[in-house]
Amino acid sequence: MKIAINMPSLSAKWIACAATLLVGAALTIPAFAQVRVTSSDKVIFPVGLKWERMRTVILDPSSATKESPMVPVRGEDINAAKRIWTDQVAAAKAKGEPADFDSQISTASYKGTPLAFSLIALPMDFQRCEQALNGKNVVDVYAKCLARVAIGNMQNPYVVEFSDFCYADSVFSTPEEMQFRAKTQNQFAFDEKQGVAYFRLLQHGKFVPACNRMIRLEGL
Amino acid sequence: MVAHTARQTLAIFWMVMVLIVPAQALAANATAEQVTAAVLASPTASAQQKGYSGAIGSLAMFESGGRLDVYNGSCCSGVLQMNGTNIASIRPKVTPAVFRTWPLQQQVNAWASLMSEAITYNAPKQLAAMNSFDGRSITGSMVLACVQLGAGNCNKMITSGRCTGFADINGTTICKMADKIDGTTTATGGGGTGAGTGIPPPSPVTTPLAPATAMGSCITNGYGGCLSITAAMEQGFAEGSGHSMSDLRNVIQLLTVGIVLLISAWLASALWREYTTGQIETVELIEGTRNVLLIVGAIFVVLTVV
Image 1 (cartoon, each protein chain N blue to C red):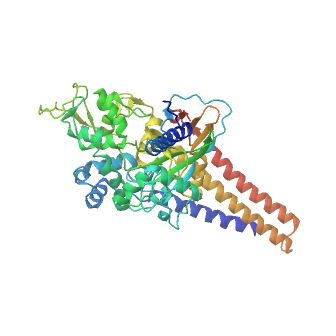
Image 2: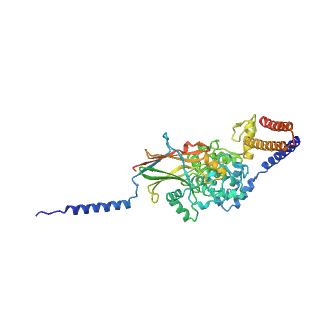
Image 3: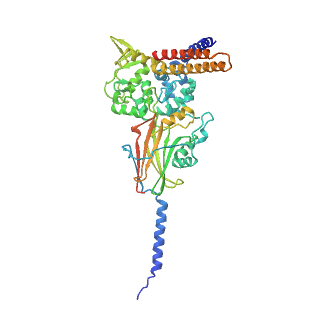
């Protein structure tokens, strides 16, 4: 007896099964989990990088005062930073404190995937951050704290964290502070060919080699 | 008439200068005792900080000489020389310029709020728990110096087991800074640490330390290093006033130049007005202009020489 196999029917079942597995996998495995993101402080900046000042983000603009107006901040940057630092915002709220951390952000795109790189200053976190030194003999204004990379749609990005990134910024727009901002700033550049983000710090008009960093993305 | 106006103006100029100098001298100052009292009264200071209140008073004298409005020219402001980045963490937000106008209690509250956290973490906590380090007793000043110079740097020192494990750009170690705060010198190098061993710490050799002690033909900087008389005067002035002599000289010169230019412009405009309304002749205009230029020139020559 010859058994006739209904091929189209079997194929459809296999395809349906595979599709279900794929959807299941897509739901359980985080998107971009295959992406390898690494950071290093051993950096040689390639020539031709287009440097930009990282944009200031105030996660809680309500902390502004009339006497000290804040620098302009983009709404989309606030939304992205809130997503990136959502755990910090939640932790502050849990303690009943305002989530008014200072943060900076730069955005880029690599192989069609949106990327956001953000730095934060957490002045009361002595575990993960190295605070700026106090004292008459101190010259440096920067703290060392966290950096995060958000990969993909900013509504639900895949986030990777790094520590030991220099942070110096001023959120005020008084004449004195604008002078400070002009000479002291976190700068960012992205090499679209290599998928590498570069960071450097300008302090008092001079670059601080100890603050040079890079973040490399592989597998996108 | 112009000469008369010029005389009046010069008199006003010197009066302004006479008023400016004492105003600088009378700038807001606090004593070590007042800083200590402010720490004890601070609602943000921890019990540990209150225990160190005396040392914090001495720290304030070391950092600023008690000046509330002092800026070190690069990062740090106020009586305890808080970094601008740390000032940015104060809520509601405040600029460093406004921070420098704050009264003592407010500055101490802000510093205590930040440092009460810092003092409980890793390196300062570890140091505070030790009986001795590198042959010297652990004092409040040493823990404060550890916090002030940075927990990371303090950790470097602890890991090395020696006071010399970390020094700032001026060669100041945490141990040396503690000595400066206390106004003493303490022998180090007794060997290793005594972290909670219960062994009595070696007795430190403590001697009074003058800011600049004449030792033969050499004026020392308090650490045994020789200083020239000029350098010693510079250092003493900076310790006392929170400003370098050259900075102060530049400020005074700039102020003088500004005032002289303003007065000259005012005199020149008065002359021109009188000339255009026919009150003086061309000859008088030229003579008046020459007088103004002579005054300006003389003042600039004096400034250049001084």
